[in-house]
Length: 258
Ligand SMILES: O=C(O)CCC(=O)C(=O)O
Image (cartoon, rainbow, N blue to C red; front, side, top):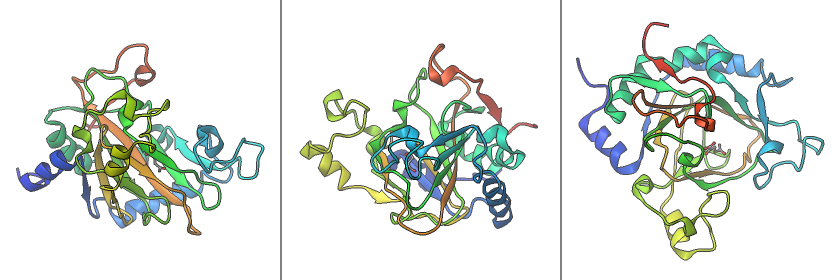
């Protein structure tokens, strides 16, 4: 069987902590997903995380403030629609993850990410520099998020920026603030942030990134909602720590008959 990733791509993923696969999802799939999402935002179909919930810079002060009902994440993507499950289980995704995680069976988490990220003009917020491992409690910090662009993603509409190689850093606790974002009052952190590159994506492009890779995103400054579908996966042998937020809902084996 031919490999879905070349040795160079795997090397790049291991060195940079992320890899972009262009056009991995078909136009037809993207169109169907966008339709489901457009039918789910007005009114926003629960469960939803609102911009006002995150208290990030630029977010509305409260749900009662102007823009306070702006959704940030349509949660529970895996159970929200079969089209989202189909993508989560697709050979295109799972075969790549098996190579990146060097494992035979992959699980998707239902506990975080597992969502459609929406970024609305006017009321979106800034996500500061962080590693997703701050959300996760697992035996090993080896998880990979798969970010599918459902439209163009650029710095201007709040697209992601990533710091290549940052998944290999072991920064002391003092480099991070109370919420585990990179402190920008430290020169070494500013030097690190200067190395960031934007993940410029088109609909169907897919970003695979390691849970220790530092990334950030700005506000959406253009007049169109940005939408992305995001799941996080791990080797079935890498278990969530009981009683933590990572263990609330059961993880699901992917890539096997549904
Ligand atoms: O779209 C964004 O603002 C960034 C989201 C993100 O980095 C995350 O949820 O981990």
